[in-house]
Length: 135
Image (cartoon, rainbow, N blue to C red; front, side):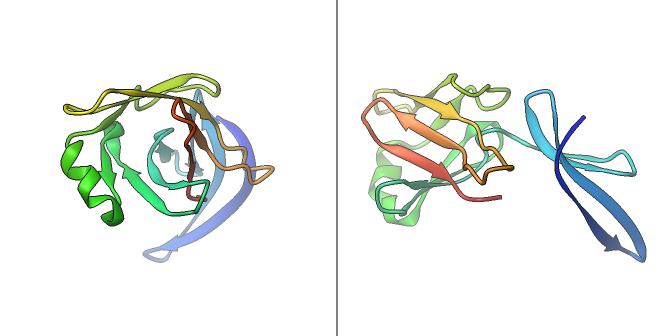
């Protein structure tokens, strides 16, 4: 584990735990003093359009997309959308937005940098840019 940020302390059921933001391979996570690791999938989270800040979707485990309510019509057209690969992606690598009814799109993943508040980004082949919500 490589520490990359400040530590935090939580109290749970009367016991204090100390955690630190860090990396384990390509995964960002919180690493606790009791050995527990909370790892974040690289693409998991809520994504917004850079152009207007509107919410696009939420990506859950294994890259499954849940389109925002404002994109309900899009959701009907592209049910079962998924980002691939969903985890283990490195900065500068490409992901594919796959669905059963739409042509796939390709986007470049730019990893977050907690030391500079740079948020994760996806730069799509159609020119759209998505930003992941701050952690």
